[in-house]
Length: 488
Image 1 (spheres, rainbow, N blue to C red):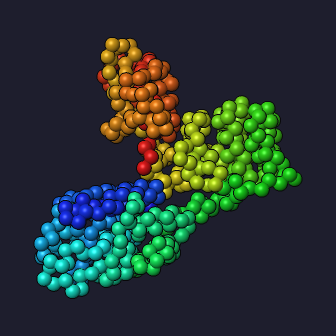
Image 2 (image 1 turned 180 degrees about the vertical axis):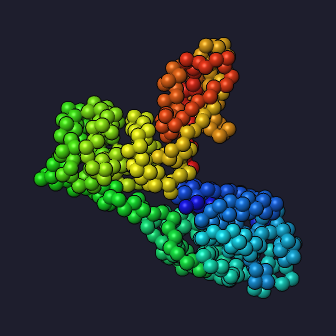
Image 3 (image 1 turned 180 degrees about the horizontal axis):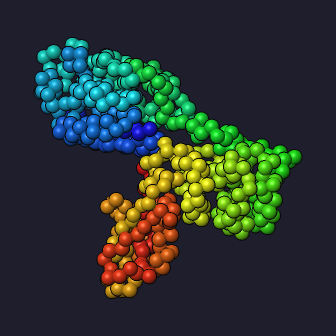
């Protein structure tokens, strides 16, 4: 399901600047990306900037299932219609405003005509009209007006029609957006229930002075955050969130799990000698899934039998029925990306990534790689290429000979012409990680390192080197720089 969002935050108004909208837009954009949205951003936009951003958004909407529009800034109503103000909106009178700000109806029409199944419009834009006193007609211009809501659309307002909202004084976010950020990630919460939570939090924060409000004609349920246990029904919640698994001393499968969890190689190795096709036939697939998770964990801890098990998985488990063989491999793949609570890891557990993903070459493992791709689909923006999907990927490495033509220096590493090379955010010593510090790698080690950072298995990667007279055997790569996907 493709999700697209346009997020606008306008604060730098010449006469009446605001404190929070750019922060609101930045934080909402980050959250939306986390929940699978492709996000277009516009901050402190002129009328022309906003118009162009909406045109770009419309182009993306035609390919999407869900569209979301968020605006934080000055908004007001004139003659029953709502206008979202640009930073250069002319505010001399109502006519000026009408023709130099974005009409909300324009946004609604754009989203309706795109044919998306679900359209969401969120407006933190109901602040007092600071120009009201100098206009000849001010009656009825307070707050925002009610609007027509097409089928499949929800429009959320920071406050009720005709009322106004406060900026969040001495806070990073406006009061409404602050409440929204607290609840938007609630797992398995429908959007209607989520906005009820927002309304309650906002009411408490403002002592009942600000009550948020929604118009909705949604025809189906929408969730920002579907937990893995709800989206994936192949395994029980206690397998997907194995922190919840209560070990039973009477079960042989649980004994293997317990011993794999021990950080002693000899105990882990001994446990794996008990895992044969014969014994595995008696185990439930949920327990095999958890065993698979712990095998990968043990392999990352360099337990010899665990790495041997992964390397020889197709032949070692050939006699096991497909559904149980799949459960073992599903568990190993799941452990790479998800923690013991079933949440996506901040950083993939990638120590044995290439060893495990090398199994993708075998036709018999295809269902497991389809499984992990399905698990990761809502998080697709977190990856350069969705893990588990087949298809070769080409990487271009730009080299500079400098004073070592036999060991050139890496200048850029590009995927689809975009340079991915950037300082490693997890390394804090800026002086030691400067762009002039390099480390020498063999070409094999370099390519494996890049493969792991990209989370694209080596057998699906091809490298093209430019800037050197011939393909190097060794090269210098920037120290503490990476091609990992940047955190949003």
